Image (cartoon, rainbow over all chains, first blue to last red):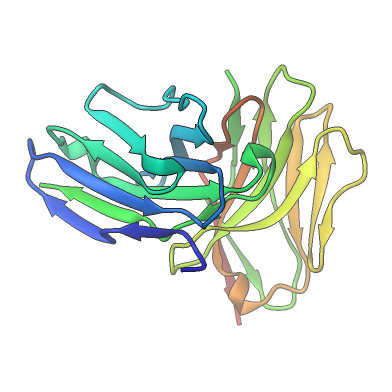
Length: 114
Length: 112
């Protein structure tokens, strides 16, 4: 597709379960980002992938969160042993030029932890 | 700490009028980029306007312009001739280092 695609668009899970969120960036974009948007809050930076460089994981809130990017394209954000405070919209964005250029966002994955 | 503050959680404006959204930030860096992003009710975030900190001239994109005051660390967005389609959340963001930091957003409603 032409834009950033995220799946699932909505996910409801029980506390303690693991979830995987997927992001397909725009073809050819070397940079990929994950953000978390909680109700009434701005975007919280989670992780940043740039080409073949080691990812910047400085924003991951705990060791229950991890992300990988396979083949420089698709990325998966995994949350283990989900907690209610993990409920949020998880946004993925990609860019051809890194943080100094325009980020193209997906529509997000809304996670609800019961 | 490198932070972005949007002090107006909600604003409204009449169609065709002008509105200004405020943003301040804090950084010790000298070179960085500033952005305004718009998030309509459909949820997908899109770039509105971008400003390089080393440029003194304020960026302009059609009805959108910024007032960048580097010494004051202020980066406000002016929307002229507001349209119903401008109704959205607006986020100010900047890139002091290797990440992009966002403010909490301002919910703008354009009234007919």
